[in-house]
Length: 63
Image (cartoon, rainbow, N blue to C red; front, side, top):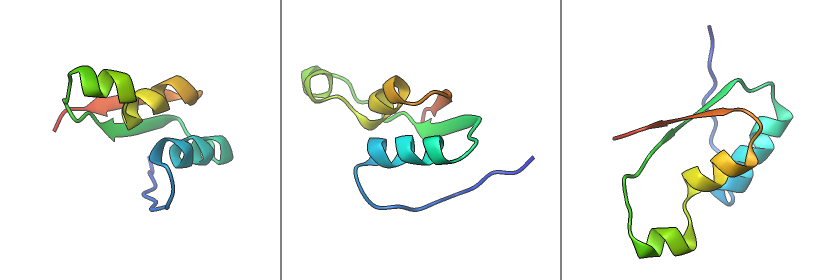
């Protein structure tokens, strides 16, 4: 089993979506911030946007 760590610049959800599309990615692992409330619901968050846009499994881990 192998995994890659990459650092890129840009809007996080867009960069992750592009990386997944470019590579044969089986799983995206992300930290779940645990924030909630009206502000998060109105603005959205990176994890939510990634889950909605990528065509692979996403694992959210609590800190």
